[in-house]
Length: 386
Ligand SMILES: [Zn+2]
Image (cartoon, rainbow, N blue to C red; front, top):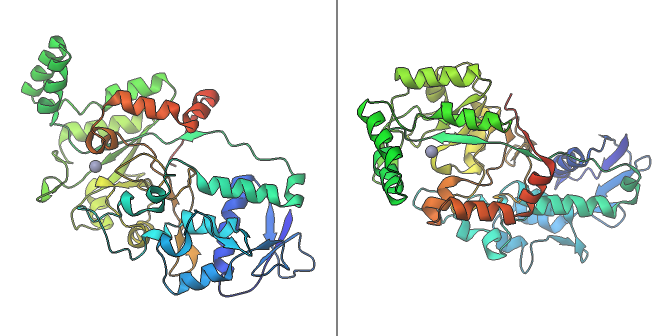
């Protein structure tokens, strides 16, 4: 058990304790915070008298509401203190999505655009930079190297947003006919004529995933129809008997149902009431349309235990430069939220809508990625949402 002392400086005390806790969890370090520097194993503070030195300047800027990355990352993505990397402050800045707070430029869906991010400016969206900070911090502290490094098996959270279930005629017929699959085309037309929604195909999806030992989560929209000129919710009625039967089958097989928070102005309470299912612990915002600095609070207030929205719609990668689930930070109240955010790394819409490319490009992206090599080598476990 390591004894950790953090300088009781109101400028950064809570924030340093928060990011240290995530670091320690990442590395499997057992620790307690203590009040005496003299008896500590590791001390953290704002000058060179401490084992780990954090930047006073960074926190001063933060409390002056200088949130955007141009204040902190001038020519590289690293906050420095006395000419050396400040890994804790850098990790805190990135993991907490601070670049997005109060940012004025948004895209057509009112989202923080990838083009505005430091990940775009420095071309590093596919890098797990917070993990790099943690690895380097760990290596830089001699006393930590006496304990074995925690090895965590790679885990994937596999999920499906159920936006449309009747929309297959137009989209599928084009693909099937293009590929010359007349039998598939006929079957699809027949199913749609019999009014069976062709994309209410969760049984087939579960069959495939079960073959590979995966369990996934299906996020359902409770609001139907158009919201505005460019925003639509689902094309199905959440109380349709076939939809409800599918939900029951999902639960029966040990898969999971979650809420796909709609783009309408309804609150979580109302949507969860309409969904009317027990065991709803998880959520993802439709269109990835959310603002972490506002909506994290709404997620917590709703009692959601796991949110899975944190990703960029325009490209695969890390929106907060971290590839692990974590408890986000409430900067206003200076404490961790009490739910877990699981980063969204790869989304199908990114490829077929934003990048105008198909499954082949998505596959190529994932196999050239270091993460995927790791996945292939380690045969990942699936993440349970409970
Ligand atoms: Zn959606």
